[in-house]
Image 1 (tube, rainbow over the protein chains, first blue to last red):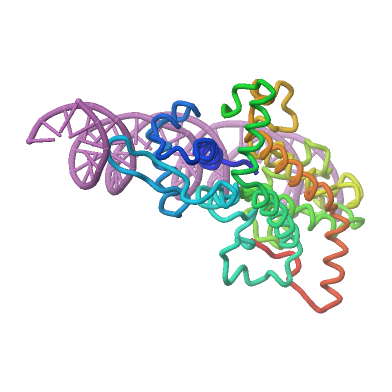
Image 2: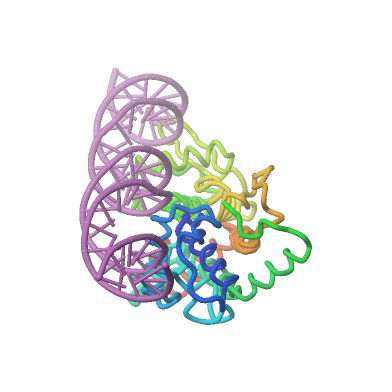
Length: 151
Length: 151
DNA sequence: AGAAAACCTAGAAAAATGGTCGGGATTAAA
DNA sequence: TTTAATCCCGACCATTTTTCTAGGTTTTCT
């Protein structure tokens, strides 16, 4: 029941972009430095987010990345789903699972995983980058500095 | 965001024991067969649950395993925690984490993981083996058979 | 005694994680 | 037009975790 660094790094990077929203393209290197993530590794993660249409890229010198939509339009769930795959404590309740498992109707434990999946989705889909941006602004006003740093 | 087979197999096995509660000790082999789990593997999982005090064992011929408490006293959360470790989408919100990460106060993403952890715990702690047993009884009355089988 | 079962430990095979590396393509600025 | 910054892409790799397998020892019942 743990997220990998993919999801966590991805959210951190996207929050970084949200905090720089409206300021043009942000080079990956600067994100990686602020968030203390390997640049090469982050490059792989952001490629996924780009292909998913969550960020846009600007190539060439003075290029970089920027959010493809407004911060309010992107949720943590959007990011996690791209980087960690569909939210599903068990395969049989995967969000993109058409056939599901063939014993779902008879299966008791299925109920647990379904309930859990719904609960997780609800939390992650309820938090937008704009929400986090507001939190960061609040924290900053209280004199806190390290609002971006995290494991 | 997926449970490993440890957690899922563990819950299935414990539900199997719950459905046989009051009938003495149940040999591991029969659980493994009903649940379609490798007996050797399940042995390792149930050893953890035994050491955690969730099941008791009876050695020797006609031995086996049985729940150490009433089904109503054991929650899915109890089982998952033993087999998968503390419920924590990120280390900084681990339930047994004293020091936490030293930037928690300044950290925005921490809020996400904390909220998520609480939501997951709430679901898993709210479901007892007795609840599942009732579901199984209901399903059985409706003529369903495979109530134990699952991925 | 013999069989059935829990108990224990070592490791193997496969997958996932968390990177690293090298080069190529594109573009703004000097 | 050159150069430097930057994205883009694919390959590779070490480590850890997961999921089992195999084999033995001990205990207890008939």
